[in-house]
Amino acid sequence: NNKKFKLTVCTREAEWNNVKDSYKNLMANNIQIVHKSGEELQSLFNEANITSIFVKPTEYREFAVPVKLFEYLANSKPIIATKGTLVGDFVAKNNIGWVINYDSTEFSNLLIQLEKNTDEIFRKSQEMHKLREQHTWVSRAKKVAKDLVI
Image (cartoon, rainbow, N blue to C red; front, side, top):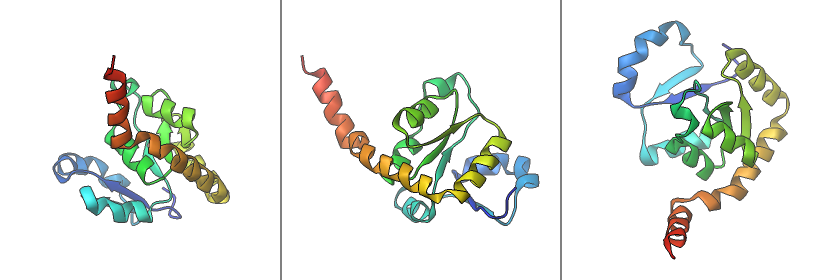
């Protein structure tokens, strides 16, 4: 729990209410829980330097990609992802963030490293900016249409 960093967790309110008691011991002044969606998310993206899809690797995570990945990509916000997940593979392949083990010490050490090297965050953001046009909903629909043409 490093007080230098601010963590904003955006989750649906109903899901948060189901689990929030499990996180009481982890809450601190620099952790903010919000329940936003759609256009309301833009203010969060504007505030963020980096984003995270730091999830426990499971069989499901080996093939599932959350919509968040494309929201982060559309906003050119570098991603901290977990090794052993499809998102982690995508982040590593495209050089748009950092892929680490699902380990709180590694996560903390990465944040400390990034604090000392903010240019690295900028470089990853630039890579995302280059890549994002290939992954808009329109470009994905065009690819599907092209792939379906015989």
